Image (cartoon, rainbow, N blue to C red; front, side, top):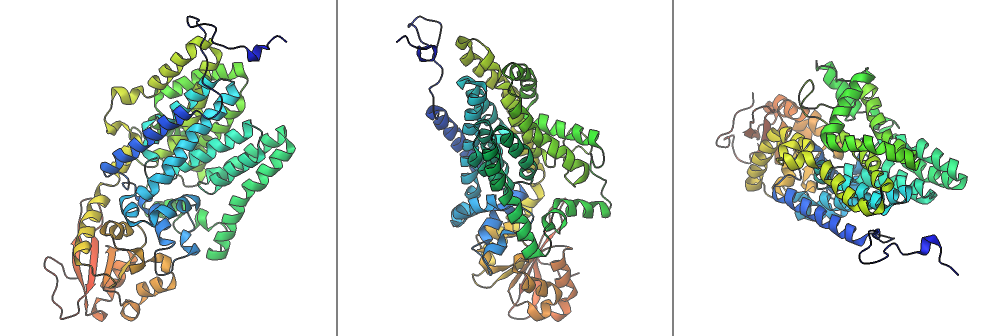
Length: 528
């Protein structure tokens, strides 16, 4: 029988112009190359000491740690505002002291998720565009972005969410209910925009295959149902994560009540879109956005609109959130000319990458490899021509917004590392102060913090009755600091032995119970 067209070899001769596309199946060489890139990125930022520059990175890692390391370890320590999957993924690594202190406990699961995201994008683009080179382009345009490489190296949630996003898309284009559902479930347990994706992904899959759509919907629903129940059971309000103490909405409303200017985009969709668009441009880079716009022509030729529409949901969610849910983005080239949540611009990256990846699929086979190379180089051209890290907007945000915190953390941790004796106990809020204990190598079980519930509240209310720990670490003006100063006459043995003062930040107070006399530590100040 004559061979079918599909069985004919593409390579006709050594001198032929037609070249074979990459082989079917998992692209092992791509996977190994990306794994090496990920490892180099983690190593670079670890050596540079950048892994815990974001305050949120430290907090994510310490939430994972306190689940098993604390006075009251256990499930309840998983918290209420941030979704639990990132902390659960970090937990096994956070149990190793060296990985916890360095931040590598958060880097390892994030790097694996970033690799999974790139490979799933490869598989989805290859399937949608029927072109392996398109898959290669999608993976490289996503993976080579410097801001994405930084986020996959540190204990944040973006790389984990990117993997769940790519898995969801891969499941929908392959018509798989379980893969789509698991991708959505992971997304809903990582970031709240995952909740926003559920109706769109499940309805699309239901339209293609009712059974697959039903399976995906059931799996996806588990995440929100679980978290609403968790908040209801442990905090008495199923929406505590949305408007309760510590939520983004609560923080924003408190700031406005204290006189802070309302955030750009609050109540104005056009302004919100302007700020989000700039964050996306700074994160992804203008060249890849232009390539993505050009790629829409190829998307139209391939009639492959679903992935583009799916990835566009992320930017829509953020603009909507900026309009009325307390989400805030500041970018350096728009008022107030500062940095805040620039990483939200990440949602523009897979959108532009997937659209641009369609371009090789409409070109002659012999030109596709060269086109992929050009696409990859053009996408990172802003950082090729301006290689300084100041051009990496997410890295720059972490640097600018952590200068003072890193300074007082380092000084306070150095003091406690020299003075603290194991078992004497420390009282501190579970927040930035916990980073002091982490850097000093003091296990969380030797501290009392907000996660210890009524006992911590009792110390704040009546320290003269309930405080027995030798040390107290507070931020000047917070409830713990106020309680210590107010009750100083009733606490004759406690003295403020150290004040860490850094320009642009509240002072850090370290109090100590003096076993003998009322002599203050050298260089300390008396309570005011």
